[in-house]
Length: 120
Image (tube, rainbow, N blue to C red; front, side, top):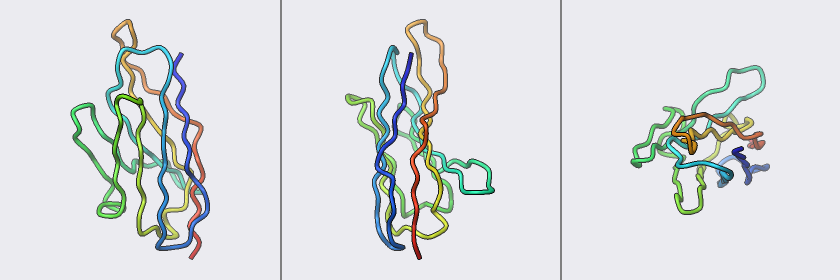
């Protein structure tokens, strides 16, 4: 079993910063993609940022230049540094990972989500 646990959400004023963390644990051979998605009330879940095992990244246009994704492979952790936060960044943020198991099959796992609220 693989567990994905996010932390670091909260309430922040517009223009402020937050750092989200996502720890992956359990039985696995390696982690391929690690990333963050978000879902605002009444909207579909959308990609925020993701990082492949080779370090390549993708960002949503709405967060480019403000958010930075990084990962610590030794700790099986992915981070999302969010700067210059805006009210429209308010959402539940979900960590998504693609894990290669000991049987060399890949599965995606989602965390439970962490609320980020930006007050204007």
